[in-house]
Amino acid sequence: MKFLDRAKVYVRSGDGGAGSVSFRREKFIEFGGPDGGDGGRGGDVFVETVSGLNTLIDYRYQQHFRAKTGMHGMGRNRTGGKGSDVTLKVPVGTQIFAEDGETLICDLTEVGQIFRIAAGGNGGFGNWQFKSSINQAPRRANPGLPGEELTIWLQLKLIADAGLVGLPNAGKSTFLASVTAARPKIADYPFTTLYPNLGVATVDSVEFIIADIPGLIEGAHEGVGIGDRFLSHVERTRVLLHLVSGVEEDVAHAYRTVRRELELYGGGLTDKPEIVALSQADVLTPEAKAEKIAELEAEVGGKVLALSAVSRQGLPEALRLLQREIDNVGQNDEDLQAAEDAARFGQKMSEEDWRR
Image (cartoon, rainbow, N blue to C red; front, side):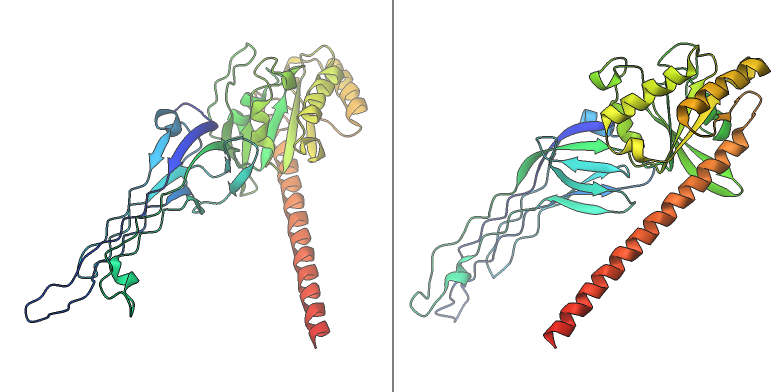
């Protein structure tokens, strides 16, 4: 299945049905009066997140979605039926933007979330609605209101716990394939990875999701190479694993290059916890490995792991560090939410005390 993380879609909700002009006609009833029913409401357009999807490829082949018009009202005070709704199925992590591509309409981050993008038009009143003491036989009815139409952008940001970043051929896809059941394409040329991959890693009976994105090179923020458009898929991650290849002549420069691209991209990526590792360590001699780790630690200002996906050196330690950081960030988020809830509760109590 091809990967698509951005799509432009046109949606239109249904028009409301028209009201009916009708009069009661029955034997032995001289003055039946108006009995024209109201029109039905037009169909709505919804967006719903479902499990089992990780791409927007369906919206490459269909970009127009229209809900049905409501049924018209009928005699004997029969109200028209509601028009059929349209629901767009999207992956978890999809954001809905207005036509300008910048105004966020909604952010869907959980399975089963439903958001109404366009409301159907109300049905028109039938002539019974206009009956009064001075107009016993109204011969007018309202047409249904038109539905809403708009163009929206669907933007997918994958939901993952940890994200892999680094230069091309830093060993990110190999690492993902070694610690998860994912099978990304692996080859010895740059930009083998053309779109993000997800995998589920398990450590000490705890599972978490890892996202691998195409490699960054200097000038990625200006569109050099594949660019930085796939960095949006690690914006939601809690921790970054920065891989620096052991075959790089200047590992410190390789680290700085990626960090600079993350900083220029923004999105809070440089504020996330980061674990730095020297990958492909099995191709180095012990002396060369120690030298490059020392250079990288001097640049990072902290501990650097040595990894080898072939010999599995350092993989368990890296997974445990990732899980620990994920748990720490999750605990901090819960503490922050609890503090905000307590502050709101205290403010509410103060307002109630003031009223007393």
